[in-house]
Image (cartoon, rainbow, N blue to C red; front, side, top):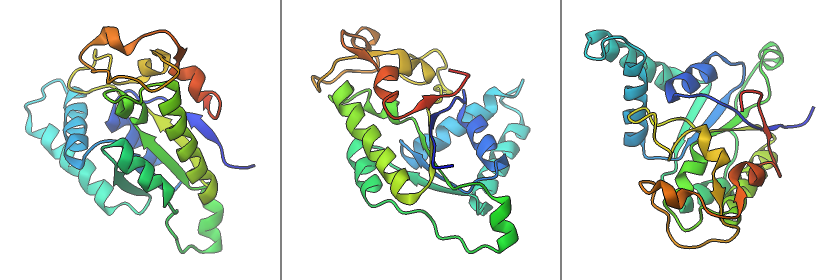
Length: 213
């Protein structure tokens, strides 16, 4: 079976990391944000899972998660906080070379390229359009195909503001114009819409949505 291109669902970034750590695939995770922004989201996501976010336990859980990521040989992280940096990274992307025994090779699935919040990254730019999204989607599909890796996209909610329209799986159902245009601010929900085509329809040219979508 050849590489797959899937759009999957995880509400919180902490759930995504847990899923990747528990999976069988070696994973290269591209985060479409800065490292600091990622850690803020991770902290908020972990604390939201606890009844008392001010307890020492929440800090312990955060420290444990970050430490597990740092020690894990299964997940490699890359941070691309702009469209330019993301596209440049994808243009030169190569999978990690992993030495493995025959038994280890049999126990591991095909390597996975996962991308977090790629659609949200377009939200404040003039490329939040079918044209701009298609360019980025084609780039990530080409990179994963070149590397022989499965590809999976995730859009997680804003753990600081779960009701925000600027993050999460609801972005797949936003209408965008066909061509690049003026900058659309995430804080103005009325400009997130517009006549054209849904992000979902643009993505379906290359990707299949999982059942949770």
